[in-house]
Length: 207
Image (cartoon, rainbow, N blue to C red; front, side, top):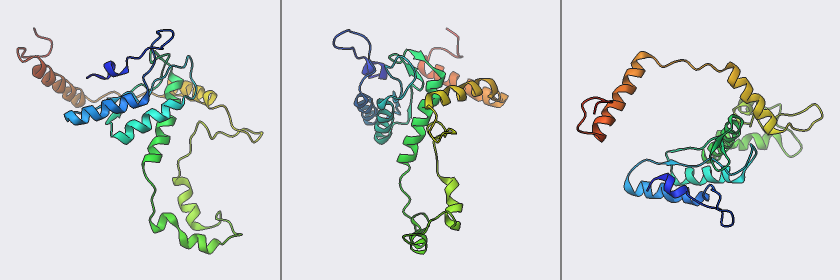
């Protein structure tokens, strides 16, 4: 059963396409694992007409991650996963990192719990001057979309920040091209897949 078959859903009143409920993706993951194959789950993508925060984004990726999906898809896709918005990709990336942090688990080691530091600081003390705080504070992950303060003491609109970040990426990010050896290896993989799928052909592209 392909993911596209699992994702087909219609609005009960209008017949419009809807992204299926998150549990449908989880079912697909479980079926794929029962068959012993890796999964690409539709963890992102939504029905909203424009970029914003959709609850199902976090719910979908969290559920599929808990089920053990190998990878996900749909980042930045809106309007029933039919239109790609670059700024929505930035927003979805933020959701992904939130889920990644949550699923990383809680470190309960003595160093992380720092019970000795809590005892030393005491009820009316503060932790800012303690070396343990200085050593660990910058290890915490903070969203660079939702934690952007303004001069008035408020926080900026994450969608506005995402659009600015998108503009910066499009203007400044220039990925390095693949090395020749990497290109050759990709060609080898594709040719091997072609031979497996079409045993009668000797080289990719031949009929």
